[in-house]
Image (cartoon, rainbow, N blue to C red):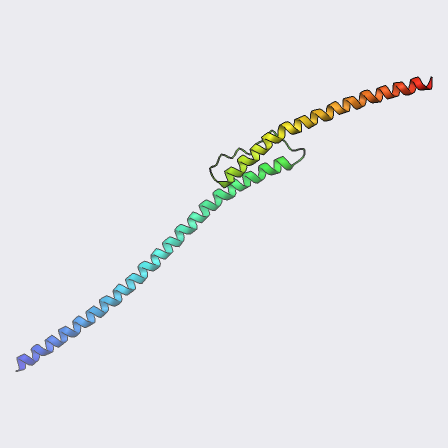
Length: 140
């Protein structure tokens, strides 16, 4: 009987140890899952921040280049020989190409307007001289 009681006691202790072990394993697994999830979230956040910084710098540098080119066009008399020259296959590159095309179309128009203004000035000078000659002849 004593041996049976000891056996039952040992079995009960073993069963309790099994329950305790299972509980401890579940707690450890849950803690490990939480740590892994938090680590993955932090790594993902770090990757997103790095990506945002890298892409942000690329976009900002292209925008600054486009802005500088537009300011050059707007400054003083507007040098229409300059081009943006941004060879990029994105929306900013499309805008730069559109500015270059616009300047390409505008340059001959401005050149022609300058030529017309020069010819008009010459004609006005000729007419002024003729008018002065006519005034002189009329006073004689």
